Each structure stands twice: as structure tokens, then as C-alpha cells.
Length: 241
Image 1 (cartoon, rainbow, N blue to C red):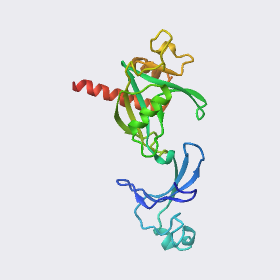
Image 2 (image 1 turned 30 degrees about the horizontal axis):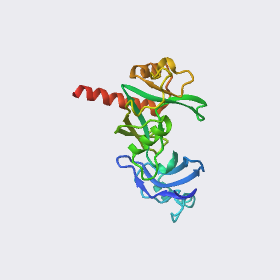
Image 3 (image 1 turned 120 degrees about the horizontal axis):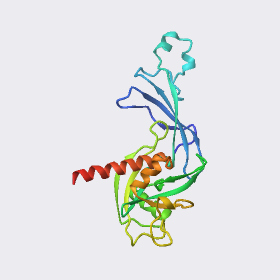
Image 4 (image 1 turned 90 degrees about the vertical axis):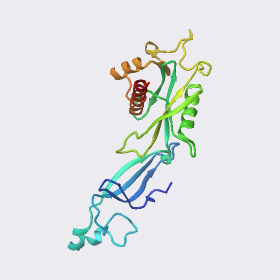
């Protein structure tokens, strides 16, 4: 990772887009575990040769061209766009743990929303770690259970406008032997929709999750998107059988 105000990327194009990114700079980097970073991209909207940009390495600046009407007319208009990334852009993983048709949800207090949220367990990835391993590690850490198998359902981006990220949606099977006390009631049954008060983990049926969504009790976007991916994949596979 570069220092603040260091260059992140060289000039690049947006493939099918007419946007051209002339420069990317880190304008903020936190010292937190997530390495929260804000990046500024200087963007123009055409392919005019760059005669004036925000790039410090450019021989002339926009200000120097201000008095030159001919050059000013040819110069592209550059717009600063801010976006964020965490963990150096390392892919993360969201866990859809499945046990006898039930899915595991975890309850967390989130400082950004100042509220408790029901979510699928998720984690940032470690350098060199594949997404499936990230998901298994997070499931064991958060719920105390081990997966007996796993499969990658899809990669997704949490917010394509303001976040540079990549998240693996991973389905993990959990059998009775590997199921510890996580989400298990005193009588040995799995916690359900009627047992959520004060709970931090719950194993819910898809129908119960549908009810929570309909009642506005699941608001985390990553969880909602991951659930849609899982449910759609299950429906497609059922039709193919």
C-alpha cells in the first residue's frame, strides 16, 4: 500500500466506458485492523490527449493552461472521485452455513448504523488465503463449528459505486457432529424465529428468513444479496434435477 498522497495506479481506461482514470492517490489511510483507505481517482470523460490533469508528474498543470485559450479548449475536464477499500483490497468471504435446511445468522452491534443487525458471518481475507478457507475460518471463529464441505456460489461487490471490494459468497455444510453449542437451545433444538430475543446466533429456515426480511428485521445489504444468491442457486438446481 502506498503512503497518503502516493500514486496507486497508472493511467488506465474503463474498457467499454469512456471514462479515463489519469491518476489514483491515497488521501486517507486508517491505522485500524481493516486498513480503511480512501482513494481519489482523477477522471475525464473522453479520450482527448491529456494536456492538463491533476497528475503531479505532468509537465504542465491546468492552472498554467488557464491563460492559453487554445490549449484550454483541448484539455479534458478532470473530476475527482472518491471511493474506499479495506484490507488492501484483499477479497473477503460471507458464510452461508447450512444444517438440515437451516441457515446460520449472527447478531452484531454495528457502530456505523448504531444498531444491532442480523447477518451472515463474514470476514476479511488474509494475504494468500483462498476465499473458501476464509469462510471456514470465520465460521469456526464466530460460531464454533466446522464445515464438512464448502463451495463458492458467486463473487460479488458490496457497493460498486463507492467500494473497491470483492466478496466470495460461500456455502458451507455443517453436520450434527460438527455442530457445537452455537445456536442450540437448552433442550438441544436449534434456535428459530421465536427464540431471537437476546440471541447472538440462530439457525433459521428459509421461510423464517423470508419473514424477517418482509418485516424489515434484516437490513445488512451483504446478507440480503448473499441470501438472494443462495436461494436463486438452490431454485435453479432444483429445476435441473
